[in-house]
Image (cartoon, rainbow, N blue to C red; front, side, top):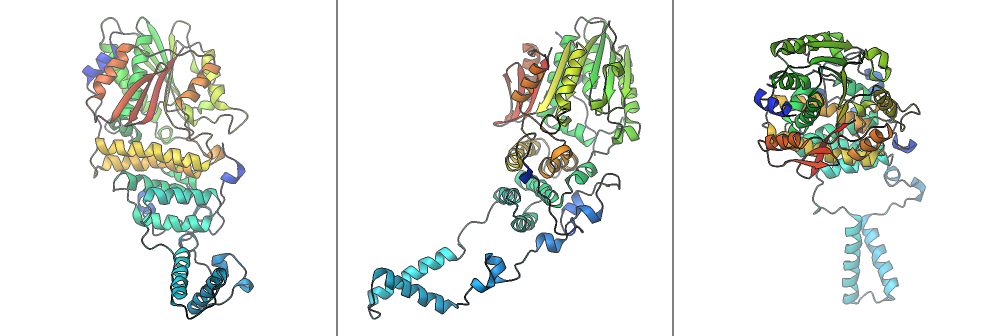
Amino acid sequence: MSLVRPADPSKLYTLGSNSENSGSDKINFKNGANQYFRDSYNQHYFSDSPTEETCPSNSDSIVTENSFNSYQPHSVSEYLNVPDNELIDYDDDDIRLKLQELERELLNDNDENDDDSMDIDCEWAHSIENLALPNSSKQPLTSKELLFDCASSISDGNMEEASISIRKLRQMVSIQGDPPQRIAAYMVEGLAARMAASGQGIYRALKCKEPPASDRLSAMQILFEICPCFKFGFMAANGAIAEAFKNEERVHIIDFDINQGSQYITLIQALGTRPGKPPHMRITGVDDPESVQRVIGGLKVIGQRLEQLAKSVGMPFEFQALATKTEDVTPSMLNCQPNEAIVVNFAFQLHHMPDESVSTVNQRDQLLRMVKSLEPKLVTVVEQDVNTNTAPFFPRFVEAYNYYSAVFESLDATLPRESLDRMNVERQCLARDIVNIVACEGVERIERYEVAGKWRARMTMAGFKSYPLSPYVNGTIKILLKQYCDKYKVKEEGGSLHFGWADKILIVASAWK
């Protein structure tokens, strides 16, 4: 993976200056449990060093190739779904004669020597045969059409038909192809994982594993850098935070998904280089103790990197590592001080919290109410704009396909087709989200995105009011976006910034008080 450099510091300075499903939707596939990945490209491209702790064993997550891909009816009655004793063994000549006799009776014509009648007989029989036989002239299904047929079959419980579609799809798609081929390559594995009930194990195995070292960024961070919709979502949040801290001497940012901490590289540079004395900044980074970063001391490394950057621009800085699951965070853990301005940053994190469709506890709204009790000066929210939370399986599949199609197309405009970074980002980050959205249900479905209107309703119910982003921040982002492909779009709506590709909104950034 190559190093992605931060944005031009001069641009960063200008930004900071001057201111659920029904029970029938969950499919349990029972036909065997061995070697689900055998002889498929999936074995090669989804094999990112899964461990015993993160992956299901071969005995409980896999479907054999024979039972999964090679279903064949054992008899004519099985194929037609009628008992053997109700079938009559006709040959082709018998069928033709029967059709001719039936036509004569219907037309009340018993003259077997009438040539005109015989012509009608033949035409009628030929028409019946055309209805009964496959239309050889019909165009083959595209990968998208076949994907949707497969998802529909799974939704209806028709596993035999779905497995045939999966086998066909695996012959059509490639992670090195054009965007439709690439998204189909990952979505078909999500469908297969749903049938094998192995989606959660694959999701865990595909987690980004790159250490947060100073000379290497995670695949997720590369995605944020190369896809302007994600990148400018962070920039919009940083612009709002910089304005909130304009006249503050002590500031405290609480981030419930610190990730690599790269969002704050640009913010520290902006605050540390603008006119006047920089504020004393404290960042509390929350990180799941079970994450890979925690195991390799990720929070410590992130803190040290940010401290070094703050020192280089003359900014007083503290980093507080909080290795706790988000749902377990309490106000006392955050150690908030009365003389500091508090900002809470939710960047691509809130959608991981289960809501009322998963549990009566509703951790999503509970977290927002807890944050409101801190009396923050500002709360920033950056989220994907698509409903993968409450939509039933098939509509969710369609929404996910349309959303990720736009993401894959946008990546094609940013990185060359043969780019290893692109393949790594798609495999480690986008693929794992797709698998989770398509294959998992209940508490196992973690990637639960919501549309902007639903987030607006949640924030309002928690007691927050919209804090529109300033015209200066909006204008700066629009100018920078012109450096990219003209299919990237940005629009203001309801005080939020909506970033998209062509006509599809992908990311929405908003601020709240």
